Image (cartoon, rainbow, N blue to C red; front, side):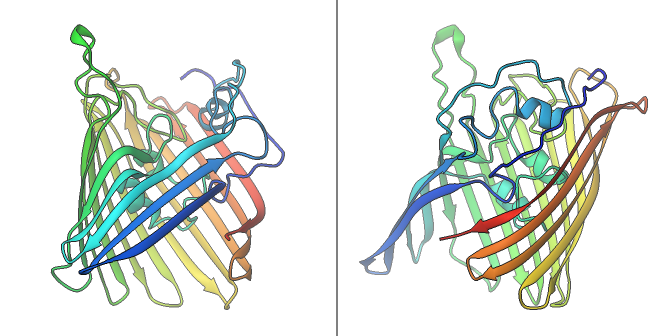
Length: 332
């Protein structure tokens, strides 16, 4: 990147403690130990007529690049999740648009609760270039538990790219994944892996690094936590590779309750990223502070502060982002 332009934004937003959404879910006992379920969740951006990551806004907020394009218009409505499921003695099966397993592994160990804040480099690595964290046309199978505390999940997703003759892109967007989880006596460990065909780029809140469009992207996540009641310790390591390009990060965090109504958490970490075309590596740093105060069982007041930066091998500050937010969140 060249010298980054300074971009700032002050105002009201609605995505800094998780996205706005309205949804429906239900389940029905089918008998013989079988249960059917469904989820239909629609996201929307009520603060303005643009989507949260429309052209001309995301580029400036996440990479430090000069905003020179006009934001694209959208009705601000999107399909967050929409899937059906079947569960029984065989385990459980879900089919449709769902969160990716690598995002779920990372999000579950984030002190900020995946609040759309800059600063968590591990989540940066687990997102797409478009910053999407869901997979369309995905089939997930959760195996029945073989031992107390053990969970195993395998999945397959399918892209919507139509291959026609010489224009074939080798099943772009097709992918596979698996997750192993284990919890006991306050200790929780998760290992998740995903491989997706021909994605073309790493994700990133700092800098979306380019890569070969014909390469597979493989992402691994290892998350560990220890809950000692008065304090909880977090460790997350992620690595994403496309050909010879690599983006990786390690985050350390601590969170704690403050009485019965409040909680606080802080995390920080480092990482590095290298494109396929480059022989040099840029260094990444990130941190996030999160404070929550429960007004009632469904409403919280929150404060968030996050920052991230990228420094080239020559020591040049290629990109820097910082966000401070406070507000109220309500779950119906």
